[in-house]
Length: 330
Ligand code: SAM
Ligand code: DTB
Ligand code: SF4
Image (cartoon, rainbow, N blue to C red; front, side, top):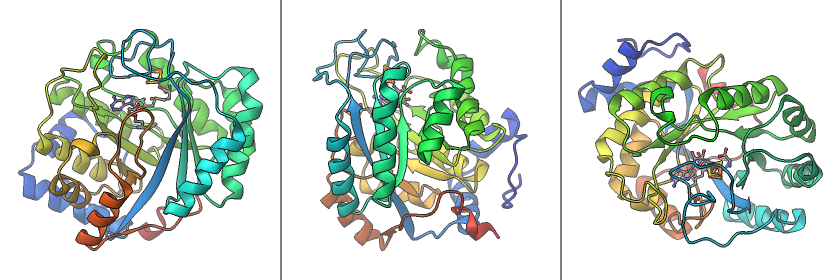
């Protein structure tokens, strides 16, 4: 097994399976070695999320509290005014975030939404932050409109393996997701794409997800690894918990497979110990969601995250100009 810092797009399921199954110390050692070739191991990127349109989503994603098909407790809110969004972005910047991610509970945005979305992107850029949006499926034209506004990143997750996918979502297919990723990539916006672990999938499915991500034509510049937040009222509220070591194995594999990408320890940190998070940073995670809310669920308090970083002797990374984040690979 090779752990040299070479960017590959031709991984096989067997290779990824062998990686994941390495003795844990060996896997972490390899991931940390790759990590140090590309990144400063003392830095973590801080991204703050804001739900700019909440709930009443027509999609049936089994994990999601915002689906109209489920019964999670939630205050439905229409698209937020751009001015209010920018006030939140400013507060996030003052708290130390370098990237501001705006999420909407849509299958896809309507053309009538685009001018407000463009105002949000421009405003976040003017604050000197990286901008990110996650709005559902995008057409090529919509991706180009957001690119022209200066959007830095678009988040669209594959969520799981192609084989497990239809046990989780029936209202859109895997290929729809791949198509949106292609539109985003071709528009020049950086891709943020990852998935969710702990939905009852097998290890083979986790391997399948990692394989899909690692063999995309370009690695997503950001790879969010979410641990399922088991929200009451969703079909996955009683999903069997994933063992933290199995979660960590995937983080390490993601780092090895996609050396120059941010690997984000995303949803689910509320239920993780400090030790698990520390091991995730050892395994190559170098980004977190920072702020007391994710979209509709809780995230650790910023004071707890600040204290954790101090305890670990780590620090938040300053904003980077998109595209320059793999500068250390030389
Ligand atoms: N509606 C858009 C979409 O689905 O593309 C954007 C917002 S959606 C909430 C963004 C991502 O959040 C999903 O793709 C999923 O990976 C993640 N997510 C949603 N609910 C989650 C949960 N309960 N636990 C972990 N991740 C979750
Ligand atoms: C991603 O991969 N995780 C974030 C972000 N992209 C948009 C969302 C997590 C949502 C967790 C459930 C909630 O708060 O609604
Ligand atoms: Fe809607 Fe996105 Fe939630 Fe799926 S994940 S139900 S598309 S908000």
